[in-house]
Image 1 (cartoon, rainbow, N blue to C red):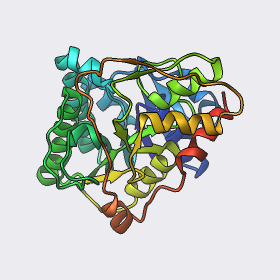
Image 2: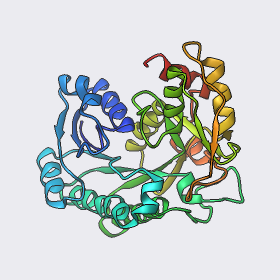
Image 3: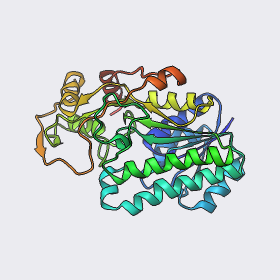
Length: 309
């Protein structure tokens, strides 16, 4: 089966590319390498994957690539993913996450793609939810343009299904972590803290550290994508552990599994705008309709990251 993965040089995308190749698919990657890394695709390119260094905001180029490949499935992961950057530059965030998604959908429609699996966000959409765990039909009230843009992208996916008959589904991830996440990046607190553990540096906690996240390991997210591509499900599906873990509890878990390093006590800094206090996803629909549930616990997931550093 021929597939296209936008954002395939990124942390999640490159893990998905590997899984697609492992099952024998042809894989074409579209990535502008602004945050993704060519090195994430070294083995994939040797195994036959193709990389097009292109920006999803360039609708003509995206359409040309997808038209030439004629894939059955497009996995859309390319995005602006930094919540803080979206607060500072909301128009740029929307250009990538909304207009870029429209470009991908239009290219998929005109090329006869069988299905589009769209990447969305859980905690980024629900904001400060009064109901935890939070189901897909809960009120959408994001605290940052990032979540608002992802919600708009979901809306366009549903519109293309209604208007053009293009099958789409949107996976609302919890906080994804795992191998290939940048330990020196600005986003991805699990990876950043792992880097501090290895280097013996003091981590910074923004706020009081009691804020919670629903962390989900990347191999579980990849499996959700593969399942979603083979179903007829539409609309949003939460993908997470379905549990809350605070930032301070995350640090404790790292100390517990981190035999290779020392993680000092954190220093505290003011909380950052646009970030939710608590997040826990209701994964009932994923379990019931998609046949998916997370298999990798947090401590095992942390061990996987540390084993590759």
